[in-house]
Length: 283
Image (cartoon, rainbow, N blue to C red; front, side):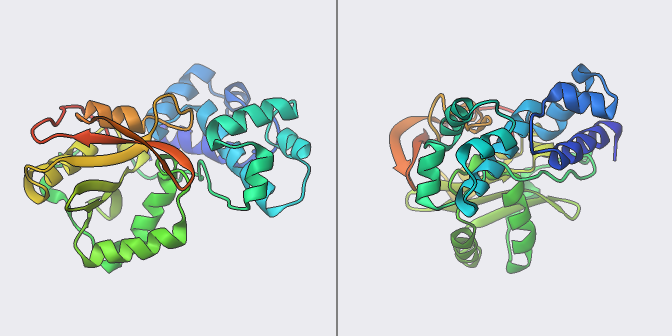
């Protein structure tokens, strides 16, 4: 594991061991004996999130779990999540979960904003092309679900059991594509035809700067959904839970469509017209 990846992995381990209570970049850097500027640079480039974003999303995920699966007072959960008041906690929780802590508890349905990221060896230096993309098989399901856990930030309200059932169907119908770097599954896409739609697209955090999303889009537009309009549903503009997914699709050539609400979550449909693919290098 190269030094940059090793440093980010150290930071993740420290964060995961200290999720209860106040935690920030300065504290992590001091504990690991790195400058906060160096740690910030290594972490962001490797993980695709800042240390602050990762801490916040992990702590709020833990808070959401406590709200649903415990009877702890909201103030106690707020303090365990690093907030100094229930009001500050409630404000931030609602920005990312789109409901108050009390409302989330009453709904009795837990879903994570961010799961722990497990880093691998750095990406290959070999060129990756769309020719390496292939249809998934049942034997790929375990690795696929590991990627789902790594990229859950892109799919609010994801229900794992429902997802697994749908994945089996997509694989059987040859509507599930994947890409590996050696044995590591680094990107995956589920899609629909008639009409053309990207139902799921995820890239391993360490590979998001290699343009893999564009490779999948090229595969879809040039070979599988040729001359069709392609749509995708993602976060609305200004949603603080979005870690960059909406902008990535915009840079790939998608334009805004209608506003939607899916599983109770506000989203927006984006549309890619035939021949309108962007040239962005983003995963």
